[in-house]
Image (spheres, rainbow, N blue to C red):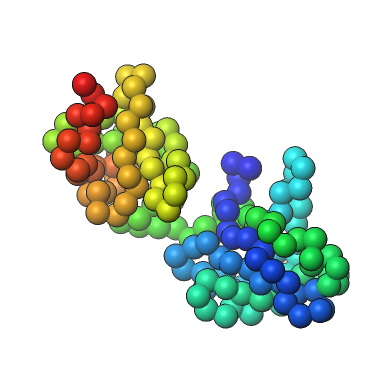
Length: 172
Protein backbone atom coordinates (compact mmCIF):
# COMPACT_ATOMS: atom_id res chain seq x y z
CA UNK A 1 0.00 0.00 0.00
CA UNK A 2 2.89 2.40 0.62
CA UNK A 3 3.53 2.54 -3.15
CA UNK A 4 -0.03 3.69 -3.88
CA UNK A 5 -2.13 6.74 -3.11
CA UNK A 6 -5.86 6.99 -2.63
CA UNK A 7 -7.55 8.47 -5.70
CA UNK A 8 -11.24 8.12 -4.94
CA UNK A 9 -14.17 5.78 -4.63
CA UNK A 10 -16.79 4.20 -6.86
CA UNK A 11 -20.06 5.74 -5.67
CA UNK A 12 -22.65 4.01 -7.86
CA UNK A 13 -23.34 2.33 -11.17
CA UNK A 14 -24.33 4.37 -14.21
CA UNK A 15 -26.68 2.85 -16.76
CA UNK A 16 -26.68 -0.84 -17.50
CA UNK A 17 -23.54 -1.32 -19.63
CA UNK A 18 -21.06 -1.64 -16.77
CA UNK A 19 -20.27 2.03 -16.24
CA UNK A 20 -19.66 3.46 -12.77
CA UNK A 21 -19.53 6.91 -11.23
CA UNK A 22 -16.36 7.66 -9.35
CA UNK A 23 -15.63 10.44 -6.91
CA UNK A 24 -12.07 11.77 -7.33
CA UNK A 25 -10.76 12.84 -3.93
CA UNK A 26 -8.21 15.34 -5.22
CA UNK A 27 -7.80 19.09 -5.58
CA UNK A 28 -7.14 18.78 -9.32
CA UNK A 29 -9.32 15.93 -10.62
CA UNK A 30 -8.99 17.02 -14.24
CA UNK A 31 -5.34 15.89 -14.18
CA UNK A 32 -6.49 12.28 -14.07
CA UNK A 33 -8.65 12.30 -17.23
CA UNK A 34 -6.05 10.35 -19.21
CA UNK A 35 -5.34 7.46 -16.84
CA UNK A 36 -5.48 3.99 -18.37
CA UNK A 37 -6.08 1.98 -15.22
CA UNK A 38 -6.82 2.18 -11.51
CA UNK A 39 -6.15 -0.28 -8.71
CA UNK A 40 -8.59 -1.76 -6.23
CA UNK A 41 -7.38 -3.43 -3.05
CA UNK A 42 -8.86 -6.90 -2.80
CA UNK A 43 -7.81 -8.98 0.19
CA UNK A 44 -4.03 -8.38 0.36
CA UNK A 45 -3.22 -7.30 -3.18
CA UNK A 46 -3.84 -4.41 -5.51
CA UNK A 47 -5.69 -5.50 -8.64
CA UNK A 48 -5.57 -3.34 -11.79
CA UNK A 49 -8.75 -2.41 -13.65
CA UNK A 50 -8.17 -1.19 -17.19
CA UNK A 51 -10.19 1.86 -18.19
CA UNK A 52 -11.99 1.74 -21.53
CA UNK A 53 -13.67 5.14 -21.22
CA UNK A 54 -13.25 8.04 -18.79
CA UNK A 55 -15.65 11.00 -18.93
CA UNK A 56 -14.90 13.78 -16.46
CA UNK A 57 -18.17 15.42 -15.42
CA UNK A 58 -16.88 18.16 -13.09
CA UNK A 59 -17.48 18.44 -9.34
CA UNK A 60 -14.83 15.75 -8.81
CA UNK A 61 -16.94 13.12 -10.56
CA UNK A 62 -16.34 10.98 -13.61
CA UNK A 63 -18.17 8.21 -15.42
CA UNK A 64 -15.87 5.28 -16.07
CA UNK A 65 -16.25 2.16 -18.17
CA UNK A 66 -13.80 -0.58 -17.24
CA UNK A 67 -12.68 -3.02 -19.91
CA UNK A 68 -14.51 -6.36 -20.00
CA UNK A 69 -17.01 -5.35 -17.32
CA UNK A 70 -20.76 -5.74 -17.48
CA UNK A 71 -23.51 -4.27 -15.30
CA UNK A 72 -23.40 -7.02 -12.67
CA UNK A 73 -19.61 -6.76 -12.30
CA UNK A 74 -19.94 -2.99 -11.92
CA UNK A 75 -22.48 -3.40 -9.09
CA UNK A 76 -19.95 -5.49 -7.16
CA UNK A 77 -17.41 -2.66 -7.29
CA UNK A 78 -19.65 0.03 -5.75
CA UNK A 79 -17.97 1.52 -2.65
CA UNK A 80 -14.56 0.18 -3.74
CA UNK A 81 -11.67 2.55 -3.08
CA UNK A 82 -9.48 3.38 -6.05
CA UNK A 83 -5.70 3.79 -5.98
CA UNK A 84 -2.88 4.79 -8.31
CA UNK A 85 0.88 4.28 -8.02
CA UNK A 86 2.65 7.16 -6.27
CA UNK A 87 4.61 7.77 -9.49
CA UNK A 88 1.39 9.20 -11.01
CA UNK A 89 1.32 12.11 -8.58
CA UNK A 90 2.25 15.38 -10.25
CA UNK A 91 5.20 17.03 -8.49
CA UNK A 92 4.31 19.83 -6.08
CA UNK A 93 6.35 22.94 -5.42
CA UNK A 94 6.36 25.75 -2.90
CA UNK A 95 4.41 25.12 0.29
CA UNK A 96 2.18 22.43 -1.22
CA UNK A 97 3.06 18.85 -0.34
CA UNK A 98 1.74 15.33 -0.29
CA UNK A 99 1.43 13.83 3.17
CA UNK A 100 3.63 10.82 2.34
CA UNK A 101 6.31 13.17 1.00
CA UNK A 102 6.99 14.94 4.31
CA UNK A 103 7.06 12.00 6.71
CA UNK A 104 10.38 12.33 8.53
CA UNK A 105 10.70 16.09 7.95
CA UNK A 106 11.70 18.25 10.94
CA UNK A 107 8.93 20.62 12.00
CA UNK A 108 10.14 24.08 12.99
CA UNK A 109 7.68 26.34 14.82
CA UNK A 110 8.37 30.08 14.49
CA UNK A 111 7.98 30.50 18.28
CA UNK A 112 9.30 27.21 19.74
CA UNK A 113 11.92 26.14 17.20
CA UNK A 114 12.31 22.46 16.30
CA UNK A 115 9.31 20.61 17.74
CA UNK A 116 10.13 17.19 16.31
CA UNK A 117 9.63 15.03 13.24
CA UNK A 118 6.47 14.46 11.24
CA UNK A 119 5.60 10.78 11.72
CA UNK A 120 2.15 10.54 10.14
CA UNK A 121 -1.10 12.26 9.22
CA UNK A 122 -4.38 11.33 10.86
CA UNK A 123 -7.65 11.72 8.99
CA UNK A 124 -10.01 13.07 11.61
CA UNK A 125 -13.33 14.38 10.43
CA UNK A 126 -12.72 16.72 7.50
CA UNK A 127 -9.40 18.04 8.74
CA UNK A 128 -6.17 16.08 8.52
CA UNK A 129 -3.87 16.28 11.53
CA UNK A 130 -0.07 16.20 11.36
CA UNK A 131 1.33 13.84 13.99
CA UNK A 132 4.73 14.95 15.31
CA UNK A 133 7.09 13.05 17.59
CA UNK A 134 8.97 15.32 20.02
CA UNK A 135 11.28 13.29 22.25
CA UNK A 136 8.67 10.56 22.67
CA UNK A 137 5.78 12.99 23.14
CA UNK A 138 3.05 13.31 20.55
CA UNK A 139 2.16 16.74 19.17
CA UNK A 140 -0.89 17.09 16.92
CA UNK A 141 -1.11 20.05 14.52
CA UNK A 142 -4.00 20.77 12.13
CA UNK A 143 -2.72 20.29 8.57
CA UNK A 144 -4.19 23.47 7.11
CA UNK A 145 -2.48 25.78 4.62
CA UNK A 146 -2.58 28.80 6.95
CA UNK A 147 -0.18 27.14 9.42
CA UNK A 148 2.54 26.15 6.92
CA UNK A 149 5.02 28.98 6.29
CA UNK A 150 7.72 27.17 4.34
CA UNK A 151 8.39 23.68 3.02
CA UNK A 152 12.11 23.11 2.45
CA UNK A 153 12.47 19.85 0.55
CA UNK A 154 16.28 20.10 0.34
CA UNK A 155 16.78 20.37 4.12
CA UNK A 156 13.68 18.26 4.88
CA UNK A 157 12.06 20.87 7.12
CA UNK A 158 8.66 22.50 7.40
CA UNK A 159 8.35 25.86 9.12
CA UNK A 160 4.99 26.45 10.78
CA UNK A 161 3.25 29.14 12.78
CA UNK A 162 1.16 27.11 15.21
CA UNK A 163 -1.85 28.80 16.82
CA UNK A 164 -1.06 30.46 20.16
CA UNK A 165 -1.10 27.98 23.03
CA UNK A 166 -1.26 24.83 20.89
CA UNK A 167 2.36 23.69 21.27
CA UNK A 168 2.38 24.56 24.99
CA UNK A 169 -0.41 22.05 25.61
CA UNK A 170 1.88 19.24 24.51
CA UNK A 171 5.18 20.46 25.97
CA UNK A 172 3.97 21.06 29.54
